[in-house]
Structure formats: C-alpha cells, structure tokens
Image 1 (tube, one colour):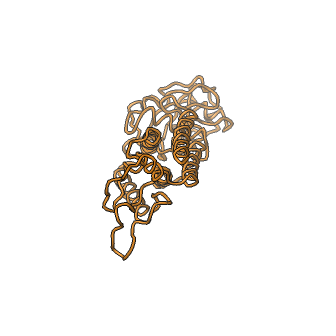
Image 2 (cartoon, rainbow, N blue to C red):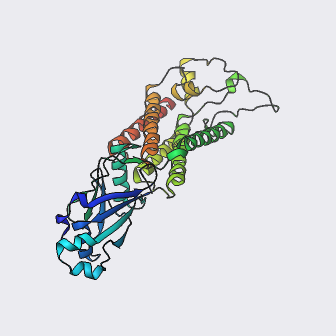
Image 3 (tube, rainbow, N blue to C red):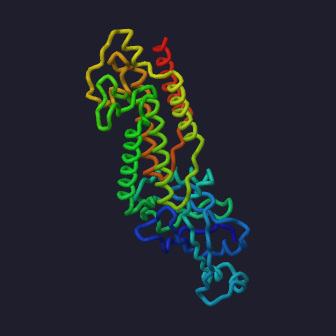
Length: 346
C-alpha cells in the first residue's frame, strides 16, 4: 500500500507541548488505517516529512513507534489482507520541531513559517508525507496554536537585552569609544574639573554605527542561544553589514575630524556646551552647525535597518537575511558620508 491511499482521518495530532506547538518542542501524530499500513510497507526506506501551514520543514528528527491495538504482531499485520491490517496497525510519530541553524534550508523554512503564522496563532494545517508522495493533512490540527520558544521568559529577556545594551553603550561613552579620535578627552586639568566648552569631545557617526551594529548582533546572538539552545549562524548578509560599518569607521579615522575645518572656513563659533557633548547635533551636523543631508541619510538607514533587524530576531528567532539591494543602499549611504567628509577636508 502506498502513501497516496492514505486518508486525512487516519492521521490525528494526539500530543504536543502544553499550550500548543512551539519551536524546539514536539508534535506527536498517530497514524492508523491505510496511513499506518503505508508506513509499515515502506520498511523505513522512505523518510517521513512534516509540513506546517503548507511550509515543508526539512531535516526534522522523527521517531516512530508501532502499537498493536488488536494484538497482531507486525508480521501478522503485514501478512493479513489490506482491510484487516489497517485495523490492527497504529504508528505513533513524534516529530521534534528543531530549528537547525547549520542547515540553511531548515532555518529558512522556519523563518518562512513563523513569519506566515506569527506568534501564538493557529497553524492552519499540519501535514505528513512519506518520501516524495503528496502530504496528507492531519485531521484535527488546524486550530492548534504555534508559539515561539521565547514563551513566558520573553519580556524578561527583552528587558535584560535592553539593560545590557544601555550598560555597554554607557561604558563606551564613559571611556571615549564613541568620540572622534582627534577630539580632546572629556577630563582635562585637575581631576574632577570640567574641560572648557571649546574642548568638549564630539560623537563620531562612524564609531556610533560600529558600536550600534556590534551590540545589536552580539545581543541577538545571545538571545537566540538562550531561547533555543542552539548557536545562530551569522549569515553572509550580517557579515557584510558589519563589514560596511567597520569600513566606514576605518575610513572616518583616516579622513579625521573635519568639523573644525568646516567651522574655520565659514567663521562659525560653536555655542558653549559646558563641557558636555550633544549626541544628535554631533552625529548629524557639520562644523557650521547645520544638519548634513549625507549624515542624516546614513543615520536614518542605520536606524531603520536596526529596527528591522531587532524585530526579525524577536519574531522569528533568526537573524534577517537582508537583500543585496538593501545592503547596497547601506553601502552607498555610508560611502556618500565618507565622500562628503573627505571633501570637507580639502
């Protein structure tokens, strides 16, 4: 008997994690009738596959257990006629809903499914196939909910990530990691003295970008690991994104701080800052006190892609794969920033 003879009524979702299906949980499907007979006849030569809401999830570990409800042995069940054998055969199939970060197809399939149904929404359908045969829908699974494994720990993890980001950012600010290299140190003269207004350090847009992407990627990696127990693969798109920010930072250091040169050209005297840097004016304005379009564009796309990145990690527990177009746009934006910065030096 082949899988094409299998009926939906012969497949039942009989057990799953409390509260519904979840990533890295399990789904137990009981196969009876012609479905069980097809599995028995396959003699383990064809793999069992699972589809969630029409999305095939490849490489899922599955165990199967043969139950003999009518007291027939496996050999007796096989040798009996088709109608009688389907009465005595029952298979319990347990699928481990594992997200394998090293398997690109598996990771992308999970991302597609989660994006399709969202968190704690009904899966719509759960289907099983044997080998290359068409999938057969499990009859009672449509209303079962799916939830990302953040679960009840989700709010605590998000708060923890936010606190770690703030602490790391504060340390970078305190020790001058985000300032232009040529800017004077925050503390001058005797200990505890504030520097004069004209010596207040200024934030570097390029260094801010490097720090932002470095922290976002690192915290996302830790968050996914703590949620799934698996180490996320840093995909090529994320590496390119980190490379763009690193190249921008290096280019900015080579060009140097051009704001004093711009201010000198136009005779602009910065207002007293009382020894304190102002974040937004520092990263968005030129030395003449005007908002620079190229700086604004670079900062805007960093913020937009950063929010998309964070939301994707929270909703799908995977790092996004930005398109070539978006990465090119980010590269052009940062390249334009460096180009204008170099022209200000001339």
